[in-house]
Image 1 (cartoon, rainbow, N blue to C red):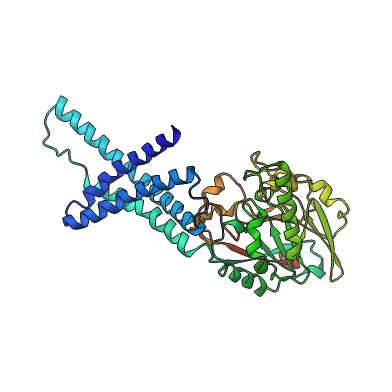
Image 2: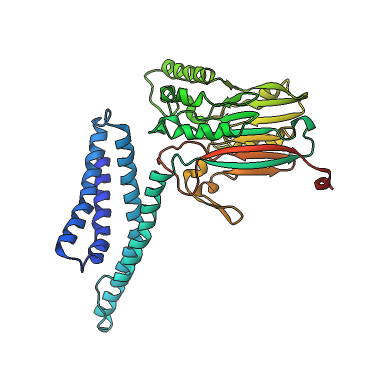
Length: 414
């Protein structure tokens, strides 16, 4: 019953939004109107057919690219129709009030026909998500952007002055549909000649097998002192159905092995101490730990830092940025820099440096993209390298972050 209710709901949206299209094409030649109407109604027929086919398992072996773009296209079209609907509703309310006046008070001679102005405004605004989301799907999923940041610390050992860190996050290899463009990200990473590369979780969407086709891409990442990584909420397989708990555990074991085969040092609530030019650098890595209850809480920062307390400088890898306010800057104020990901910047927003930085994700996460400071501690939230759900990005591009550590100068201290 629920699926038929859903189909009826979609058809109701189509029938209502069709009124605006019909008014817009009123003066068109008959052949053009027929073609537009045919395309308009072909979309809901296709959407309903695809929905029923998916529910009956008929799409299980269909081409992944076709299914992804088809489902996303349907979503974009119906989202655009939702934008049109309020303007049609306002116009109907206007006509309703006018009808009441005509019948109960006095005739005004005013036409009760649908307003072309409101219909055109609705169609114009509805075209914004239609074209922007379509552009973001076609142009932006592999349009990697380098974000360069310099962070100054009072107590940075002089041996670490100028240390270059590259951070990537949220690869979500199961969402990739093309292999060749991903190589551009690796080239961009290696061009930075980083001392360290950090990956902050979500290598896959659900299953370790998603990473197999991309092993020979990501194993090319190079760093002077190595690549270090942690797990994200998607890496545990919690969002997939498994035939048994043993199968789920085997999947996680394979994923951990993939980190090793890539040459990455996976940190599971532990740390590594590095001697960099004579200074001791501690790299801490915790499993996913979130302030939001719907995400896993597997982190053990107290255990990870044990034995590293005396390090001159500490960097923490923690997938979920809400962990920072939840625990890091409350109980561990000797952690200089925390690196996180998880939010993707919602893959949608507006970023104009020096002017505006906005995404709907800010209403869920206080720290959602870029650099944040609390006292002497810093958090950097990566916008993610891949994508999830919507196969594109609008305004928030996939990120390779290059962070340079600097000793705060005497002039700036004064």
